[in-house]
Length: 114
Length: 110
Image 1 (cartoon, each protein chain N blue to C red):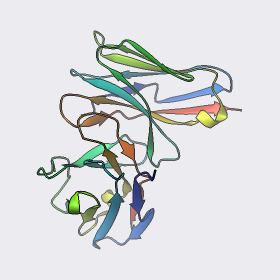
Image 2 (image 1 turned 30 degrees about the horizontal axis):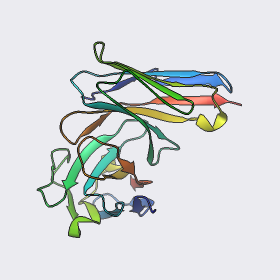
Image 3 (image 1 turned 180 degrees about the vertical axis):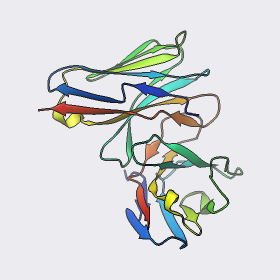
């Protein structure tokens, strides 16, 4: 079946602009995660959605970052007033029912802030 | 701070040789997972080992877990050029979070 998809695959924006990144999880997966990966680094947890529960936003680095998940499926990560340090690959993952089980990753969105 | 730390940070071997990567972590875990990443994009799940398991195999992959030393190793046998990638360990606890290490960059020379 279809895996996790993300769009756009690449995004170049100017400092100060807002960007929206989209994630389509695997159908039927109740848990959805966003991570950020800076060049040559590991993954930094950003936010976690599980079913209808309140999301865990503890990893969001600033109030310029927000995310929502509509209808328990598609998620959008929004970065307002982008800064150069926001440049990174943003990865989305989903899992069947959360917990610390296997996560299935999308191909990521490479964000470059000029 | 990151839970898992991989060692070495980079590894270069000849095709056909075995590659061993290590991961150390700090707190109690439910499971430890290894992922592979090509070209800085999406990660692919390789193998999951639970805290009550000591060794697990999947094809050319062998994972060991020593909870007393809070460490794990990933062995790739008979490496191929296509194994060139970054490899990450990730630890799972009783919550939903996976904590990823900083990765080992493996280069397999043809």
